[in-house]
Image 1 (tube, rainbow, N blue to C red):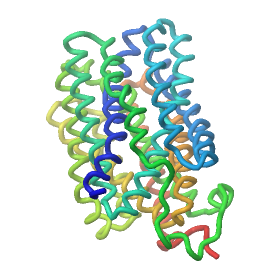
Image 2: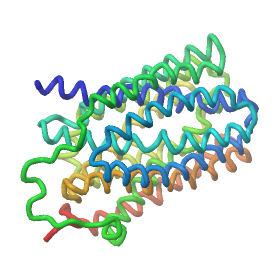
Image 3: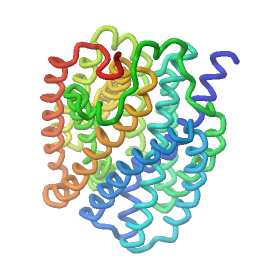
Image 4: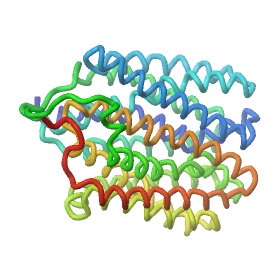
Length: 391
């Protein structure tokens, strides 16, 4: 199969997933507000979903490992996602929305580390650039954000669900196009012993990695929960808001195109530091302004706060773990690094935003600063080699 066709098959699932993610991330709080959910309750929903996601990511990852590959699990979860959209449509009270959210958290989050694990392994096997294949997920995210913004502007908040459904129905078919089992890179594991989750969790460098990257991603909590609501309250229209979200991911795509070049010059820790440093600037500024020109500039920093950190994290997992440990590393990164950390920060975000409004962004500056401290310790602890799995 030609490499470009392999890349297209690998990119399809991510595009379908992130089209829906773009709609939900930018406009889900608007849908919740339309159902009468308060700011504190929004924080509770986001936190609770993340807690469930941690358990789900670890357990579903173990199930996929036992089954010998993630494809069947991803097909099943894709079909379940269609059903859950219908459940949300009929959830009108907070308790009903809470109940559906718990199920949604269990089936929506686990596919991402499974997909990334396949992507990291298969791009390496076929000589493809991970960042360039993953880039199409970002393109789809932009499309989902724009379509959701226009739909909400013209038809109202209920259309957030319908826009998401338009791509969710393709999750199962695109999952079927993925490899049936993770391909092994010939010779990649020779000379390495097996290891367990416990081995990783006893590694100081791996724990510092989870803390640094987890806090970088968790620092987006106020933006993801209340960014759209803040900008709406400032009088910015929905189409412009969708453009702000799309702009942040468009700049992210540019960084991904040059991800390999940046990695060679900055190194793994340098890429993650770029994300954390940009976060300290971005969240401090967002605490004090809703000026459109300023927001355009600040949203461009998403290329660093998300993309640079994510590429640095993927590079760390590739270098610090042998190939047969990719699934374990990915699951821990998503479940504990980003999932558990975000769950905690989401709840505080709701409480802080209900009391201080957009000044809650200042707490995200503190979160980024803590992550930077962990990264500095990581840079002193990890020298670029394998952490576990060595004979």
